[in-house]
Amino acid sequence: MNRHFVICIDNKNYPLSLERRKIYEVIPDADAEPLGQLRIKDESGADHLYPSELFISVDLPDKAEKAVACGE
Image (cartoon, rainbow, N blue to C red; front, side, top):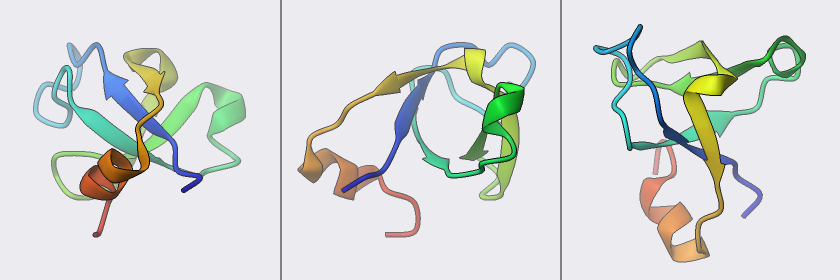
């Protein structure tokens, strides 16, 4: 499906915006990635930039991707 998902491993500075151990879909942002940032749709429902070290990348089976994909 060509989507990129991450799991939040540290929400210390963003406790209202991110949940630890939650899966988030990364929204492609070519300008953010070279700066070590990821664009994530957070708990507010809006997308924001967060430091990439707050997340680990995860590969999901297609059925799981469909279940957690943003806006579907």
